[in-house]
Image (cartoon, rainbow, N blue to C red; front, side, top):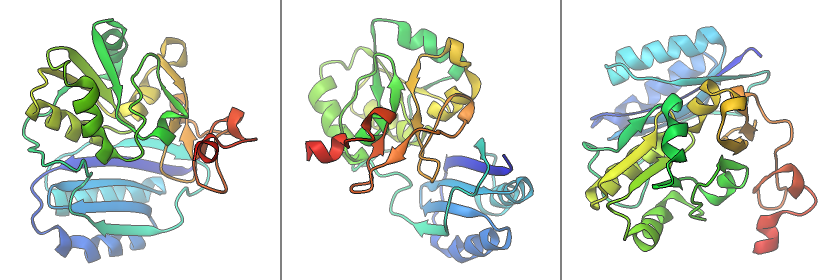
Length: 263
């Protein structure tokens, strides 16, 4: 596996983000990196792929010339380039929740090593912050599935279903962590007292926790041609996309897409 897939996000004050678009696109093209880099005045969000040397060089450039402070990223590997194009997009928000959020106070980070103990507590409500097509491929045992189609639907679900649980412990998780970063900040604003989120997201958990000790069931949907990854971030050999609607299919769905059947 000689293609490095780097996933990262970083919230920071980025008022002149639009002015960096061309330089970033040129640097990605020069290094033969493909994937998507999202820019907004609140920071960056990206998954990109290339050779070891190219990814390392681009991350150094991004940290030194654009972000100007340290940030972390997660890596996985595959045999072929999982992206078809190079895209640098300007956005109103790095990730859109549909609510105004002050990012100064987020939920408490929980490392992958500590996550199992937290969600094993019967007093903890475990909330999957992802969309329905992602949850369909895999989730943590006992997690609440909000059955949403977009992230912007999640605040309504939280108000409706968890509005009476503001004094309870709530543990959230998502693919790489960025959605929970914004979600937990919003929940703190809404008066939720004890909000936790999985640091580094599902990807970090699958990277660090052996399958024999894992509370994860299924595979983790990713937004590239691999479709999903499993423990050790190994690309799925069984997940597929419906040719009619694009919904993620588990092996048992290949004969009949549950999304097409529902609609």
